Image (cartoon, rainbow, N blue to C red; front, side, top):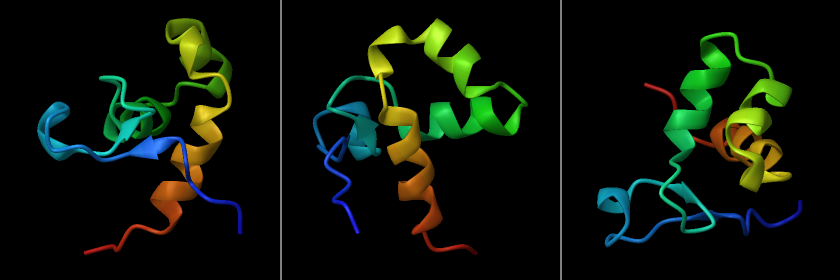
Amino acid sequence: MEPLDRITVDPRICMGQPTIRGMRITVSVIVKMLAAGRSISEILEAYPELEEDVDQVLKYTSFMPRD
């Protein structure tokens, strides 16, 4: 399995929520956009700096515990 090196957690950024490369774009923002029906292309249009980060967001969320 490749490391999820593009997902970072820093208590000083976004109150410790998982973010993408330490930017103030949280994993949850991207997940909510996907859940709302936005395509990866649309997300990359809105956030062109994400590059291949959306793939890591999906991999990261697949390992998160469910309630």
